[in-house]
Image (tube, rainbow over all chains, first blue to last red):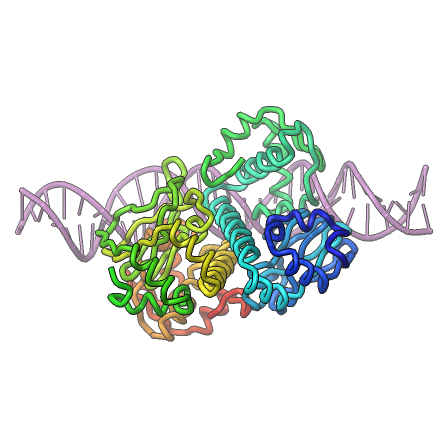
Length: 230
Length: 230
DNA sequence: GCACGTATTTGATATTTATCAAGCAGTTTG
DNA sequence: CAAACTGCTTGATAAATATCAAATACGTGC
């Protein structure tokens, strides 16, 4: 594929500042793949042969433990994932599956490592990307340890609300069972929590959410101005 | 201070491969500080002016939310911390305090960023360090979401056991209230969980732990060969 | 439009975990 | 040495959350 085919990619922070020749080289060996929904393309424990970049669609990162699995993160376009495993050439800690049909750009890890070694600007961008992801997961861990389930749901809706530029009404980004797992609760509990939120400024009916009273929701979620970046 | 004064530092993976001149430069502006126990030297929301490297002692990273606080991580020597905030020049997401008297090397963030930009080997090492820390916190989040409190304690003891090369008996690394917070439970519950473990291969009496039957402990903690690296 | 499979909701109950309140043990301090 | 303090433990209870079971809604394929 040609880099020019997908303009969003070159403008990604990760690739925006790198040397054009190096960019052409790694994009020359990258390939775009189309995946159907519900396809697991990365399995925990496997080798990270490719850096993945989600162009469009929706991807779920999850971990498996014997019989049960837990959602760790939703990946939205345009965004890279599993950079840490690809860079350190280690085993995946998480599995990944598509939730909707998705287009994903695959960049051979080895090529990426070489490019990072040669191109300081790319190295800096990769470092920044990794640092941001680190900070994000610190936020997730804080959220999990500090809030209980209802509060986590409230905080999640606040984040979505912000991400969608304050849209009064929006759709949940994934099935409720996935959201439930992401928030560390059961689907049954999420359902109940959704009803409860009616008394706290948010009306959730099926997959659609209405933010009626952001202040009330914030009173419940107690977002921290530092760790939660709303 | 001179880098030679503290030989462990130069042999840290982060600094082992960098150019000697650059190393001399950043070490020339670094300074070693001695902190008494229970001193908070980093506050959530502050600016990350220095990369911290714990030379000896013990440091707790924690987050504060209004009145209550939660332990996120124990930092043991010799190890850097808050690299992500120092590199991206952002606010701290966590506070840090010493648990015991500690010696900490402070490297000005700005200097570090400059050195990373100039020295590819240092950049690579920093990237690897960050990637490792990212993977570690993924492990923490997985642990928190997949296991309940007793299982988390069991897994924690297994990790300690491994870290201490399989020593049959060892001391808990910190006060129990800190361990409890780290494991996401109350001190009361930790106390009860410690008693319960007697039936699962570990005897915890006060601060000392005896691993009697690792297999039994593993049956409880169900360590994952991939995500838990025992 | 209907039947089927799947996701969600709702209710009843059980389990896990936290909270509150003492009591106990080890340390520090006067 | 006693008093005060602190951290840990224990017991009783309450709150949060999960589990199980069933009913309802929803979308898909026919």
